[in-house]
Image 1 (tube, rainbow, N blue to C red):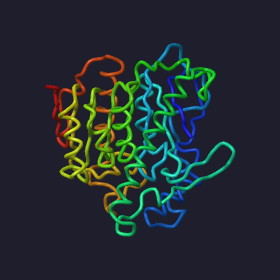
Image 2 (image 1 turned 135 degrees about the vertical axis):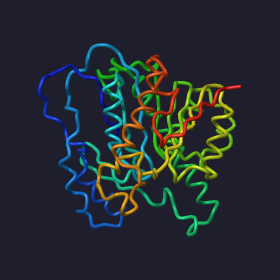
Image 3 (image 1 turned 120 degrees about the horizontal axis):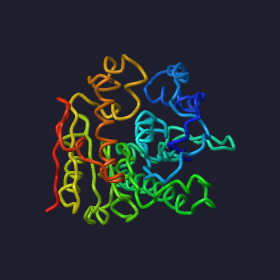
Image 4 (image 1 turned 90 degrees about the horizontal axis):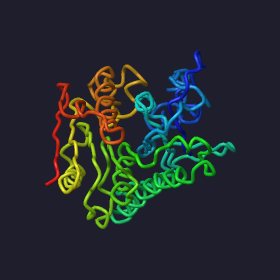
Length: 325
C-alpha cells in the first residue's frame, strides 16, 4: 500500500481528511504495542489533516520524496512532516510495509498485521537467525522503496495513473525512521535513482557488508535522538557519512526519544511523563524536524538556498557538516 500527497489547485473550502483513514484498525495495534487496551487511542481518530481527497494537481512537475516508516509503524505516522514537504512544493509517497507495518489494509478490505517473526527476539531464536532476519527485514523495506520508484517510472499507465505525469523522477529523495531509515540508506547506496537521503534514527546495522562497502554518493542528513546516539549503530552510520563522496549533515537533538521523530508528540500531552517520548516539548521538536527536513530537500531537490542547513538555530541541536575528502 502507498498513499500520495501532492500540491493541489486551490479549491476554496475543502473538507479535510482525517489524519489516518485506517486508524480504526491501526489504533488498537498501536495501543497494544504500548501495553494498553485497544480503545486507548481511539479518540484521536477525529483529528483532521490539512489535506483533501482527489483534488486536481497544481500544474507543473514536482520532485518526489518517498517516506519509509519504522518497524510496526504505518504510512501516516509522520503526516505532519509530509504536509510540511507538500506545502513547500514536493510530492510525497508514503508506504505501508506489509508484515512490518503495525497493520495494513488493502482496497479489497484485506487486513494484514505485522509478523513478529520478521523481527524475532534474539534471546529466543539465537544471534545468527536474528541477524539474518534483520538483514531480510531492511532489505525488503528497501525493495518496497524500489517498487514505488518502478511504479512511478511506469508513468500514467502504471499504478499511480495520471498523477505520475506530475512527478519529476530526476529529483528523487528518500527518507525514513528506524528500520525505514535504514532501508532508505540501503536503497540510496544501491540505486542510482536516489538523489538525496534523510534518516531519522536510521537503523543501518542490518545493512550487509557488501552494501556498506559501497561509498555513499548522495547528499545525506542523519538526525539522531538521545536513544540512538553513541551506539554501535551510530558508529556504522558515521562511517557511511565519512566515506561519502557527497555532503552529509550529522545532527543530534537533545531531549528526544526515537518516538519524538514520528507522531508520538501529538498523541498525548502526557507522553513524556509516562516514558512514551523524550522530555522535549512537541512545540520544539516539530519545528526542529521541519526546518531540517524541508531545508535539506529544498537544497538537494529544489536547488534553493542552504541557510536552513548551515546554522543551528535551536539550543537542543548539535549540527556538523561532514564534507567529502
